[in-house]
Amino acid sequence: MSKPIKVVAVTGSTFRPSRTLVLTQAIVAELAQHLPIHSHLIELGDIARSVGGALSRKELPETVEHELRAIENADLLVVATPVYRGTYPGQFKHLFDLIDQNALIDTPVLLAATGGSERHALVLDHQLRPLFSFFQSLTLPIGVYASEADFDNYQISSDALKARIRLAAERAAPLFTGTAADLLKIA
Image (cartoon, rainbow, N blue to C red; front, side, top):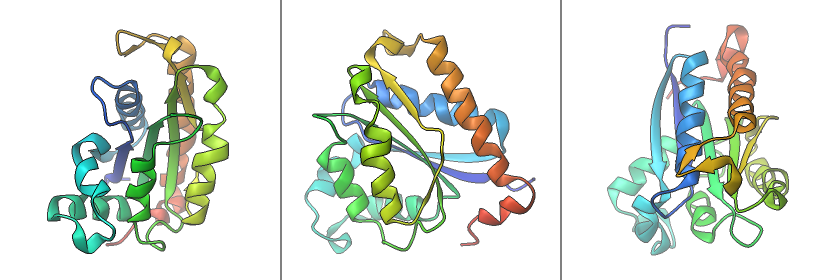
């Protein structure tokens, strides 16, 4: 395949440094080892104030509208969020409330999350999968969850997490080869 895949990565953290951002970047880097990609990173922290103050897309500045269009036109979304009180943050959800409900139909989504401990790992299946099911997206079966123990000084230190990232990218790659390449968006 010669045409790069448009990978849009959304990180739901509003803080820096951020383990969620580190995880997102690691996933995108691993995808680049398996696929020709053009990646675009959207950090919620950069647009949170504009997103939070808008009740509709008409109220957003052009810079945020540009980010929403990037999400809607992605060939592959990587969506990573920190876990707060058992779920994703409200600002993260509001960002996706502003996405056209038909724009992500059949868009593959690689789900990822970070939390303080392993007890939040089910956020992938109990919170994120239902959100993207609403959009009729194709949530990939292998998600990536990382706990605080998987990092040392905001760097991934866990071999098990590195292996999970590699597995998620390896399993995503076949979607964009052969006839599965029809998933690329024409727009």
